Each structure stands twice: as structure tokens, then as C-alpha cells.
Length: 433
Length: 143
Figure 1 (cartoon, each protein chain N blue to C red):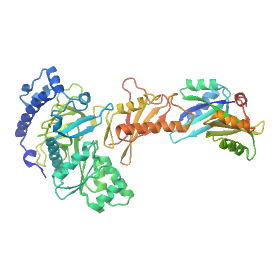
Figure 2 (cartoon, each protein chain N blue to C red):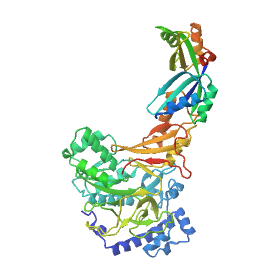
Figure 3 (cartoon, each protein chain N blue to C red):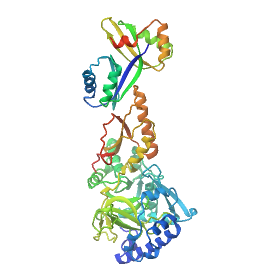
Figure 4 (tube, rainbow over the protein chains, first blue to last red):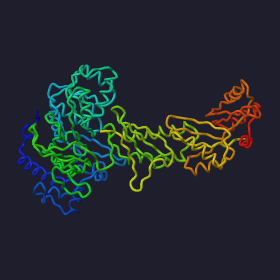
């Protein structure tokens, strides 16, 4: 089912003409409104008038998370601040978050994108959308919410947490569409089993899952245990939030990128060179319509490839393969982005704690469990158990405060965390995705 | 009137305790008293030995995290009520026991109890007034 048949089935030629028109307008606008982009373009010797065809996009400099950090909080906004109606943030690599803004029109575009996404999953008016993405600074909750309202579904803005109540509400309200992270869907399945709730007693029909990488195997598990169809959706706050790309129910093979709003590129992460369609590399996005926070060639650090074959659902948009990895060390723990550098930041702020640590991620049932192993030093060692336990709790609390995700701190003996010659191996991810 | 105790951080994995004792044995260090506090992740081994400095050094050389603390050792008759009498004095003085452990002094037929108090000086004073025998460091090291 298509939400916007006209745009979603545009012949490629017409789509590309639209993209070029929007790209040129974007570059003009950003060059005029954002000094940082202007100076980067000037340094590369590029003027907006140099963008004559779509392939000229590759002449423009990349934008990275570091650029966003330098311009914290509002330096890259491209409209007067009184045009901004919403602000979201996502976690940054070094404590300071990344801030994104939306105008009224951006919020409308976003709702349009999420409406398309919901239609990709077969949702429609009359559905009861159980939205368990977190509401708040995270884009997931509100992004999904506006789309669900736009298609005329009844939204339950339940947000994350309190799984037993979630299941009770799904039973009592007759939820038909579930939106959450795939790991939370598995967690709900576990709790249902505990509560002896059969999936046949629920009206759930489909689930739209995203915000973290998952696999075909997890899809099979979710579909079987919840007795639903599960589709993969993709987005990131720097580009929009959820609603950048979505699988269709027809094929469930690759995520259609809404190319009238975003231009995807796949690059070689080392050289920055644009790779031909079908080759695997880093995914890069340029936003075509965004007003408050446009990005030009934003490097997502996600690894994927583009699929250009036509799809049986009728959408002419190219698809991206499920995300298969990252170019950096970012972890996604229960839907939250976690950078080892943030953990290091917390540890270094506590006196006597050595910067020797390791993050071990496991999956207990459906939930991600993060353990931070910290080497004990003579300075923090005590003959009293309570002193050491207090230290562990303090680190746990500070990590939770900074990242919004809980972890377990384990004190380990000195020199037991492997030292490597070059880059320290900070993360051991035992999750089998 | 205080006794030096060393404490060692041990991760909960098999063989660590054996390694500590082997390191000490190889250096000719004799253990006089010990206790092990354990949590689900780690343990703290507390030892009173005949040569504190040497023990500390050899353990450090073997990459153990070692701390040194002063504790109070008292001697009490090895009979019912021996410990109760001491704890009564401690309670009345409103002093907290962080931890304690005990051993039997074979030749004297007495028990020796090692205390870690939150306020050691106050505890020593209270016990002395109550006529409890407090041992000097050398008396314990050379048991």
C-alpha cells in the first residue's frame, strides 16, 4: 500500500530531476544561511552555481558528527531561530550531544515520511498503533507518533518501559501495530511468556522495528513469537529521525530510501570516493527539503550497499541493504547510541580510576546487557567491601546519567584488560545479531 | 597498639587465591591470620603475616593490588562468652565494627580476634578500660 503514490512511484528520470532541483536550492540556501557550510565550501573552492547535475554532489565537502559537535548547539541551523518549532538531540562521542531542529514544515515532512513508512508496513486508518519508541529528546517516539496520526491511526503513546503494563494495554486496547526497537519486541515476547499471555490473544498484525541493527534471525524470532510481520525501518536524528528508509511488506528485502527527501551515496570510508551502486561502503545522506537543520553529505558511519533493482511493491526508490556494521566503535545498547569515549569520559572524571576499561555487551534473553570492566588501582582499592561497592555504584550512576542507559560495573584486577599495541580493544560485543 | 594488615584485591576466578599463597610461600612469608570477604564479582583477602613489608612487595611485584590497613587484635579466653563480652564494650561505646575475624592461639589456649573499627582509637581506649587484652603488632606477627 502506498501513502503517496505520485511521489513513491515517480519514474527514475522524473525523480532525479526533482532531486537536482531540490539539491540546487538546498546548496544555495545553506551557502547563504550557514557560515560554517559556506566557509567549508569556500575552502574547497565550490560555489552553489557549480552544482549543475546530480553527480556534482560529490564535489561538496562531507559533514561529520565532529562538524555537528563544533557547532553545538545551534550553529548549523539554517533558519532564524524563531522558525524552529522542535529540538531533538542524539548522543555525541564526547559527552556533548548533537542537536537538531525542525521548522513547522520539517515536522510536516517528517510526518509524511513516517506515514509512508507505516504504509510500507501495511498500517492504515483504523489501526491501533502501539508506539513503544521512547518519547523525549530521542527522535523515535515523536517521529513515529506524528506519522501514525497522519495516516489516521489511533496512537497509544506508551513510550518505553514497564513491559507488563504494555502487554496489558496491548490486550485491552487491541493494539494492531507495534513500533519499538527489535530487542524490545523480543523482550515483550519474553514477558508475555512469563505472564502466560498467548500471542493469539493479541490483535498485533505488524511491527515496525528500528533504531538498532538486527538480523534476519531476529526477524524470524519476532515474527514467530509475536505472530506478526516484522519490517526494518531506518533513520537517524542528524538526517531526520525515523522515516529515512523502510522495508516494504511485499518483499522485506532492503529498505526503500525516500529519495525525494534524501539523496543517499555509498562511499569508501577511507578515501571518501563515491562507490558504484551495489558496492558496500559507508552510507552518506544529503537532505533535500529540510529547512531548520539541513545536512550536506552527512557521513552516517553505517555500512551498507544500495539495491537498484525494481521492487514488486511498485516504489521506484532505491533500497539500502540492512545495516551490516559501522565504521566507528559506536554501540547501540537498547536503542541508545553509546560511544566508548563517553564511558571513558565518566571514568576519567572519577579520581583514582585508571583509564583501563573494557565494555562487554551481551544479550540476556532479548535485552542488551552492558558490563563495564574497570581495572582497580591502589588508589581506589580499599580493605572494605562497601567502599569498593560504593565506587562501582557511583560509576554505574554516572554512566546512566550521561548515557541514559544502565550498565553493570565490574572491578577487575590490574593489567588483566588486554593492552594492544595500537588502538585499544575497548569493546567485546557478544551479541549474536 | 595496632596491627598491620595487608589486603589484596582478587577477582572471582579460579586459582587466584592459590597464586597469592604461592607467591607468599616462595618468599618465605608466613600467614598468621586471614579472612576473605567475597562479593559476586570480587573478593578482598586480608592477611596478617610475619613480615608485612616483604609480603606487600612480593605481591606487588606479581601485579596484585595490595593495601595496608591498621587493625586491632585482642586476646580473649577460648570459652563461651569470650567474644560477647568484647562486643558489649564496643556496643556501649557506640563504635562500629567494619569487619572482624578470629583465630585460635594454640599455645596459649586463647582466641585472638582481629577487628577493623570505624574509630580504632576510641575502641582501643574503651577496651583497655574494660580490661581487655590488646595485642601489640609484634605479638601477632610472631604467633
